[in-house]
Length: 91
Image 1 (cartoon, rainbow, N blue to C red):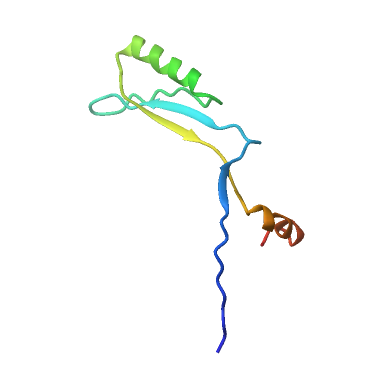
Image 2: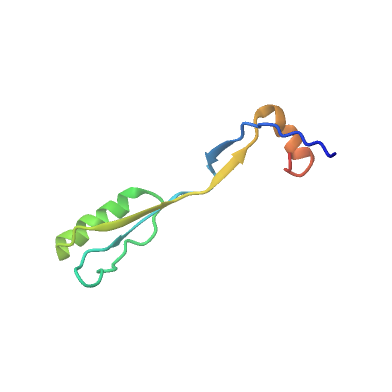
């Protein structure tokens, strides 16, 4: 009989500080079809919110689909970090 041992390792999931997050919005106002205008992708929410305000002023549209994207890294606990580097990250 083969024996297996499973261990709990408390990895953490963190936002990758080396990559900028992405913010964007798309106008979904409309009865039959959506407007579809979009803000483009930005590294912060400010330009997207300003675009939404201007689009609402120009069109009267008030409904938007907002998207946020980022990158994440999974990190082992400090006591296993050296082990993960030693065998190519498969600890």
